[in-house]
Image (cartoon, one colour):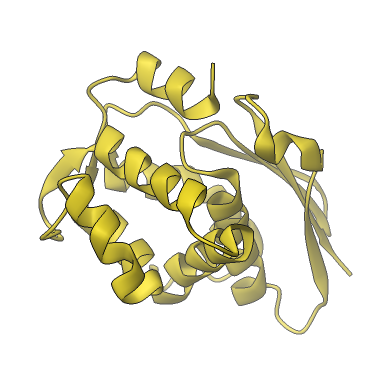
Length: 179
């Protein structure tokens, strides 16, 4: 069973607030419009709650039908971070990565836990994700936070196992390394 299907079977009543979806589709511009219409998300209202299944179906439809999909999906994740309104006390990479689950909970309802972050040492974090969003979008979110909070340090964000991004595994691990 695919990652998204396993998640949605576990949380069939999950909802997401429109604001959590808007930045993703703003990143794609008019390319997103036919997908939004197809899945009943047009018009998309920031304060309204939608079935998470609609959102997931839309993302995976885009994933299956658009060219340059990996870079588009990663770009969407980065755009989410670039346009997010973050609290002023979120001023370090560790705080940002540890806030991923809080942000998920703020945007969803009945959707279980999605994120976890473990600090290995001062320059390495293991960030795990078990949600239904395409892994490349989640990679972009992690990359966006690292880019925003790494300061002048160079960094890498890698899949623990690149084969996991296309598989049916529920748990995806990203390795964040600061240089």
